[in-house]
Length: 324
Image (cartoon, rainbow, N blue to C red; front, side):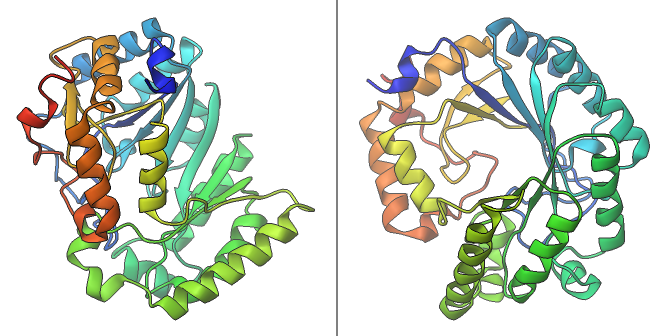
């Protein structure tokens, strides 16, 4: 038995609304890009139905992400439906489409945070990792979040293109009013996995990166910005999941539910079952010896993480008998 078996519903739903994005970032773990929808993403009515199930199940916290969630026509409808029912929300965005109008509407909801990616402190480094993106637009988005009175989180994905700017990005995030700074080792998933030789920082880069984070994290105890970079490696988080699976459902744009972002296994489909049944499937799958064995293989070899975030690659037989 795991601790999650005592819960009737997840404590967090991480809901990827789409694979569509206005950018095609080199490090993207979901391999999102402009007009790259999954062929059968949930429709607006299907998404609203799922939102109703989330509310009915008593899920307290939902993260809306993508792709770029602001590219989804029904994004605000879903956010407002959840928020009106008291569900706390986290919105994960690249900031390119975020403006004062969106900030004003979201500020009326129970927003736990707006998370914006800030992968550089110069336009050159930022655009090299996020081709076609504007750093000035991201800074404006961060200011719009704070001006609307919402909590701002900043996330930084280190690659060999931007890792040297970590000090400046930390200072920038603090100046923009972020309450939390999220980072860690680059995940070898999605587009990052395909471009790994060109993106992965060197061990020396990471050593300096960690020293910088440790120094700022120590100083932040006297300041007002939290540093979140533990676990540092995706594999460390996966090891924790084996020991104590997280009370989180990761829902893909087409309604399927993945075991974890860096595992290929799908354990449920909210198009075919109620959210509460999907949760029971998820809990049962974490007791499946075949799943645990595959997870240990992923821990032993980081290259095992390099599987599509769509979850198309999974074995039905590995799940039979565990999820019914």
